[in-house]
Image (cartoon, rainbow, N blue to C red; front, side, top):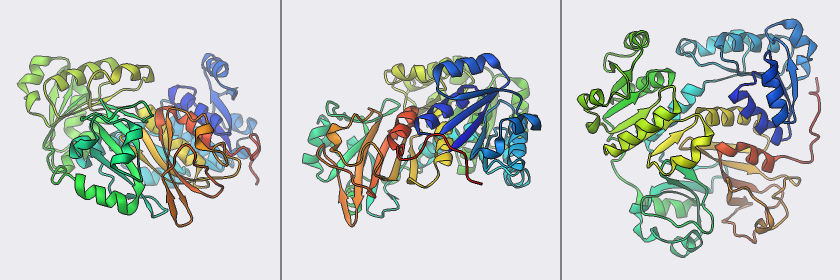
Length: 459
């Protein structure tokens, strides 16, 4: 695919890297020359220093020859306008980043009248994942892929205590014909490897044949755990806090938002239902939080505009004994310290948006289905083509990245739980789990080397 990205910020750079590793031809457009120089020094992409709001600029770069244009500037209106211009000038598909709640209320009108194919909202994307965790607890026992024979189940080790203390290679001795593909531990989803040992506090993601998983589900299913959420405190009343409060209030939870900006408090109070309590004050004001019964909350979500503050507040909430604590963190360089803090879930809106956009560009030619796991990993079903790196050789000979695991293979009527000696064949349906924080490695693995990297769209 030939892809243009308007905006050389953090999201634009992440998308460019992932698409480049997937074999796409990427052009990055920005008015800031220093940003383009920086991205040029990091990635093998074409950069164009121009104002994409000018029709003449879009024409000069040959926008009609592009398969996709993705707008990621800070301005919703700029993203919408550039996308509309590009579509009108002949770009095949356009994707716009749009964040404001006002635009979300008229989403279909915007898409239809401006010719935008897809709208991606990072704040809404992370909110959906937080909501799924709090309200639905990521129950995936019915997560049957399109092959119809392979299922994924999530459960706490405490529901199957025999697993505590065993290593990953020992797992099949207790649960044969199944594979641990992911472990949620101290706020992070990790891909398990041979040296990893399952602990009693772990949350496991297990893949297997549908009937085997159904039988396991009957043993580990926790009845009534989905109706416990009653009181939630959200620290930070920005877009994420707004979307989440609206969803949780409609779910039936009592929600409190702590926000220090008086104008933002007024906005929240006039745009959310009266069931949501708006508290004006700093989320770092511990006496205020204690006065508002922080200790009695079922869940706390830290979603201020500062990563450091979110992590600190989440740690404080966890020390208060809150059952579910979720932190919004946009910087990937904090990932190494997160697992030591004991926070339940840490989500990165940049990773979630990058994954969403990359899947939209990749389409359905090689990925039949995909689903996010705790907003940190992706389980997907892929059709194996002859020119993919992992086809035709034993898995143990592959230099698979640590962020990827081959979970299961559907071949004809057979379900194969792979070992190191397993060989994937052309047209196999392959179930794999990967961390979205390293989506570039996944795209590199899935790249079809039989296709030319640079080409123009047939018109």
